[in-house]
Length: 105
Length: 246
Image 1 (cartoon, rainbow over the protein chains, first blue to last red):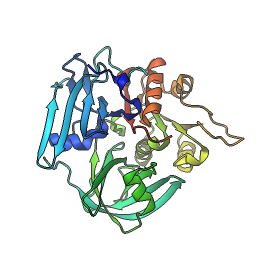
Image 2: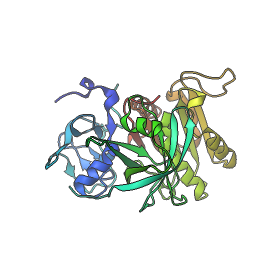
Image 3: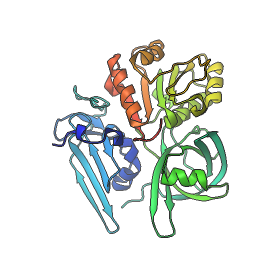
């Protein structure tokens, strides 16, 4: 898995920066949704995921293990989605002992 | 694609210069939806050749506004949207907006407190909406703002923040200037660090609701510093701007 240290860290945004695009895709406000990382099992709010929006699409990664949890890209007639998070009803959010708001610098 | 929040053609009704690089744009919308403090709007510009540029800007005004919406926007070097708005936009122009957007970086009095706000540069904008909301409803929830800017000239809303602090014993603001300081500057003169965070937070008790907004490096430093001084990671909500800002 690509390590976050390989990215320009100054490009990292939060999931809430993608709230508008996510609302278009899902039809509702998503940033307060708790989701479970399919790689490490941490539960995070969508708004707290690491967001990369500078490329041709949107990528959201787990802030704990950096696994890709969501990708989207749109063309005029088609939208491509890759959703790897697991929806959860856990309302507390951020329950992974390893979770943190940022990753090591 | 679903059109969960429709785009609207908003009219600029006023423009206010806040600092040399920051302006507040006041918009009248055909269908203004009451926002929650901390939410943002997407702004979309279309060139005649079809090219589209879109950016997100935080709402500065309180939800309890007077029927208009205020977005406070910093001029970003080579910024397509902020550059156009700063250089060309005039009162009467019509701009495409959609919002309000976001539910994660939101505070309202119903969420309780105490409230710790940490802002860098124009990252103070959504925090200002929270503080204006707190003032508008007459809340006595304890709140502290730690506000970092490059210089005194770059402090947005300084007069209003100082007046807010004078008018409410439950609110205090601490400034730090990272690049240039007046000779008689009474505040801090360095980047935000754990001792500074401790100094601001210690009067709020062990578990304040915490919101951090600013350029990505500043947000990471502040959030990591808060964890170092004992904050639970889950209690810290962040909003990063990316590489721009102070």
